[in-house]
Length: 262
Image (cartoon, rainbow, N blue to C red; front, side, top):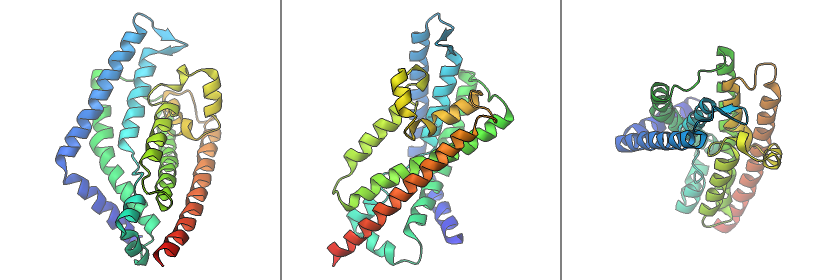
């Protein structure tokens, strides 16, 4: 376990070496927030509420959703880069588990992103947009737990995409399609409150609504301690299912890799 902690530390420190990326990433996040808040302000115009959702709720939802998505990211090419370079053969020979190594690298990168993008963007939003505070301290804690579960769902979706590199030379198109689905169906581009009923019904049977939007609803108090259990169960069920699919594809891919290498 200590070796994986060291990998996390190394990934974190590697991000600190690229200061330009840090400032540009933070600037990009802030521009997105300012532009989208201006768009929502124009759409709401003189209306105080739309479908029972206030302008402040929309702004809070967007800011938190964008901050989380920018603070927690998954590299869809974590396996693909190793396969395409041939380094996966050496990785498999090392005593460290390659899957645990990739998870540790992802966590290290995201710890940096949380400090460099998530926290600064929230602080700036608190000052300029006065986003709504959490419904309660309990809701804030439950939201953080839900964010962790949402990240694991996102991680294993990205992992499945990356493992497809055992069968496809280029997985860029898979990654692009995945990003579109996550962006639209998770509520980061358009809050799910404003989606047609048939779309929200369909999304309930996917993991997308519990990646970002469920934590947001917990934060706002639309989901409380007495109603959060079904959300957590759904998140855990999808984590287990996606993990199982990812492992199945991984072992099938490794066998294919060995046959081709032989």
